[in-house]
Image 1: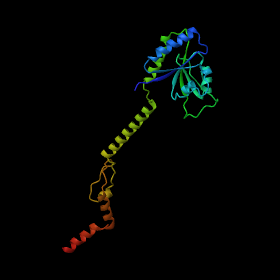
Image 2 (image 1 turned 180 degrees about the vertical axis):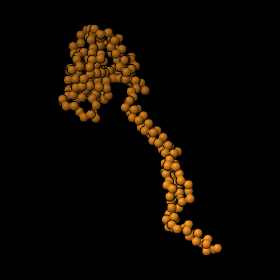
Image 3 (image 1 turned 90 degrees about the vertical axis):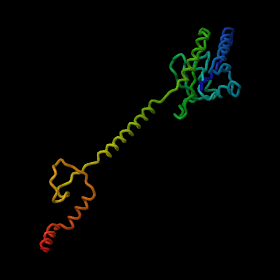
Image 4 (image 1 turned 90 degrees about the horizontal axis):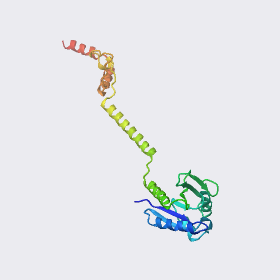
Length: 229
């Protein structure tokens, strides 16, 4: 979906011939621009509460561009008066942006300011340049922005999962070897080198238990053989 930007043109307080001609040409050109929704209002200082112009400005819920003959400070004062308390002014000419709060108290971080892209009007600035500036703004806001922090976090989680999987696979492929003493292998088993290690199954434990219960089993077998003779 193409990005659309509301563009509000605030008229000059005293409209003379050259200023009125500039505004009419600018409005006519902007009407035929794709993605720029243009609205003409009176000078901000002359707008009263609950008028059509006031409802128009108050009804702009998202960010918008505002072209005015006055300064950005002038714009902030009268937008606060019209019910927009928290404003972030972003000049399109590259000047530093600044934030203005009507009551002087910054809101909570969960309440972002209304971003206003400020366009300073002047009869010395060609209309083509002003329109191109608004085109560039529209194109800039059409570029998707991705969070590097989220992507990095996902990579870290993915790497941790891969390391865990490799660790499990390694432990399954190479079970831990437990050295077995000569006594556990029985009296007839040959001695093992010190470095030898084998797995210890459960039946060795049973064999060990049997030897503990009949410690003289060998001698008993010898006595039985003598008895039969």
